[in-house]
Length: 283
Image 1 (cartoon, rainbow, N blue to C red):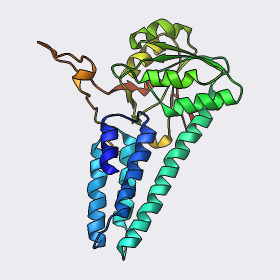
Image 2 (tube, helix red, strand yellow; image 1 turned 90 degrees about the vertical axis):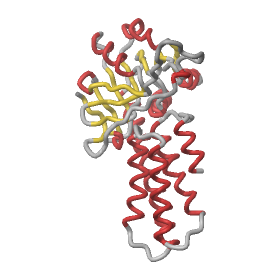
Image 3 (tube, rainbow, N blue to C red; image 1 turned 120 degrees about the vertical axis):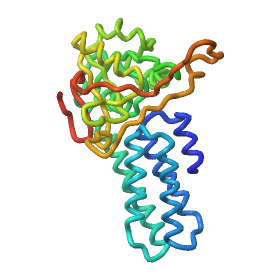
Image 4 (cartoon, rainbow, N blue to C red; image 1 turned 60 degrees about the vertical axis):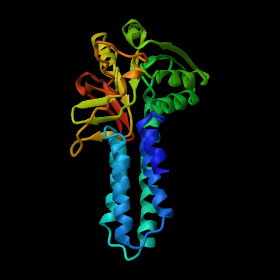
């Protein structure tokens, strides 16, 4: 399960950072089913496999924090048996996963209340929290028009568009990333998820910064949704990930380089607000 989860994270088979954090944390349960002679042997394996999961994507703050919390809590305890350490691991995994899922759910609930009925929105990439917020808002009787960017080069936005198209009450339009400046003039708000906010910078899927900058120029407010656990004030250094150039251009590049960054950095100063499980913060 751990190897499969690492591969899933590296291949971005799951696009929501909250879901990635949950999957990575739950993967540690594989160790509970293995045999270990001593507590020391078990905790060494827990630390080693926790490091492997965290290295699968160093940019995911929620993944880093969730896995590290489980590993640190178990290894710092003074267990008198392997079974006690395993029992502690199960309990801690359940606690961390429940908190991540609750944070995401509450953020979506808060956003659903905040989003105005009849608004025209633009969203980028794929965010399970944004989707849940819109689903909850529609369930409360609201309706929306939503523009969705493709999120090239992997076209992750198409997944968002398909999900929104299945929700009655949402009129969905898929656009190319570079067309955001054309359609932002029709929008009341930009709503995006977040990988994390570190100090004064939002890190999210590449393309977020130009959308937010254009929205700021056009006086369209930008709201970011996500769990408060993704807002980091210290102890975390964001590391961007660079995907294979073949995702951008399948054929060989002759005489030039191809760069494919996964994330970009948006100053929070050009955001209007952040909605988390703690409520709405206006900048």
